[in-house]
Length: 179
Image (cartoon, one colour):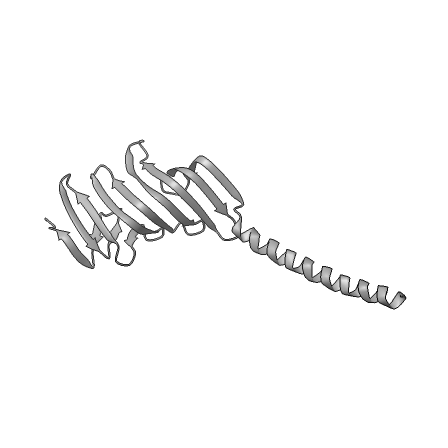
């Protein structure tokens, strides 16, 4: 009977060791799935060094420190110049931001307005390249650009540099560009 008990204990130890290893692996994988910080109905101020800060108001901001990522839903954003005048504003349904580079992918009902030029970009999917200070459309996504209050151009493959208001399209779908 002693051997059976000893054999049973050895089998139980292997079983428990395998369970605890699986639990540790599961906990490690879940730590990447759960945010380190989650803010609901939040206002976040992104200070980018020498540039004026960007103010973000969101339904939810989930920050994942180990992944260097923030997921933001139902967001609007704005930026003022040094005198307090609005120079940039917009909104999107969601965004995923690389917290190291400040690159972002914006999704759903996107509108970006550049003031005082009254320049507007509308799309369903855009990438923000932080270092280049550019908005770039993804894939075959159509982008509409409004300028000079009443002129509009729709195209595919857009790259917009907001500082210089330089816009390029790979393909125009609709509209006329006036010099």
